[in-house]
Figure 1 (cartoon, rainbow, N blue to C red):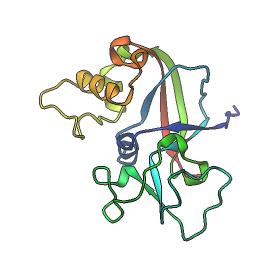
Figure 2: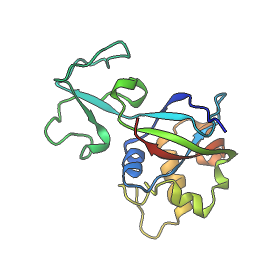
Figure 3: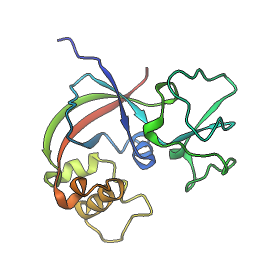
Length: 178
């Protein structure tokens, strides 16, 4: 069987990136849009980032060729919202990250469609438990309630929030080296 090897970007929060690197996150839910991924597809991760030295307040695009003197910094490695040694560096949003700045690629292992609130207890663990290991943690809170609160913290549109129970793609993945 030949696997489809298309490469597409996916934007993730710093908490999600940390959970992937820690080995806790092996699944994600994305709001259903027209695009659908397939097993074998590669997803290059876009995350909040900046450069050292700072290049500008506008993020460089795909046409920019970074020199070896440019260091890419990732918000997932920051303490709070600041890098320990470069608190004055402007953070670029994940959606602005060019492929050349990405450090993480995921291979889609499986995909299915479901309503957000149908998440199983097993899948809650695969989601990475960012709600437990963050400032959002609430002692004694159920996994489902923690996930719902975390979900709403990263989805601001009313139709995408937990209460709206949007249709999502459930994507299982493994990090790969490219």
